[in-house]
Length: 115
Image (cartoon, rainbow, N blue to C red; front, side, top):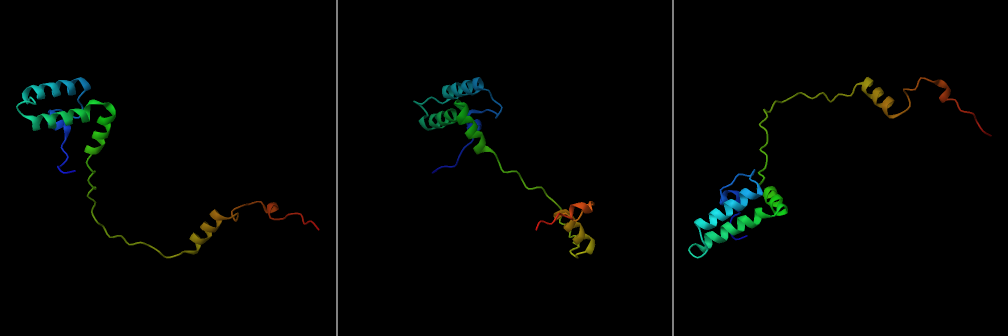
């Protein structure tokens, strides 16, 4: 791209909530103000903006291109003390969650032996 990307809504003097009829009317009023015979460069810019907003598919692509990055929320940096010690009860809870140590029925542990 040789030149910077311009907002087609701003070129036509519209908001992003404009309907298809409003886009068409704004295009024709801009063409009347800047006819191609007198101002060919301005007319090209207006025509390019209209082409970007005319079809619904192109308009969605244009809207996606115009989305600005969300600013990162400002969060205060608060240093916190992190407890990384391993407690025996934590180990037992982990073993119970990952194995069948939490079962209460002893009959499940005794299986019939086949010879």
